[in-house]
Length: 203
Image (cartoon, rainbow, N blue to C red; front, side, top):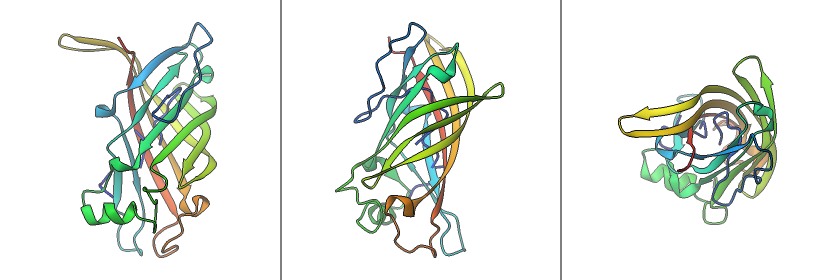
């Protein structure tokens, strides 16, 4: 897997995401505003231990979704994210092919990883605990992200202006929980994930 930093951008402190195959709930409250993920400034990176000798990493080059954000009460926000496995990139073509093979993620049978939040809790001034359903390899399990709000406000660069929201998040998953058990424990079962997310209001 290409050095990703498996963090996404599955899952960067997001209040409401809607993605390809992962639809965020419709905005019912007046305080909720939709933000679309800016994939060019977001990343989901994961890493693993390889027989004790190294800790390679890979990333998802494609991150799809929208954030339904209530800036006044982040606990009312929600997130749904989609990571197409065709975007998995370790920087090594043969490794990418192996990771997408039936030995690991089996991208031909399960082409997309999704995350849908079920609960968001406020932790301190800028922290969030985001609980949601992560679907990998045809298995769905609850996962909790430790997230941080980086900034919510006006993004301005030259003539471009947009309301934006940025988050970081981390989590650790056990791949065996999702039926991905090849080479465990020589290749680590626990997979740290790091996400950074930039989302902007559509015009």
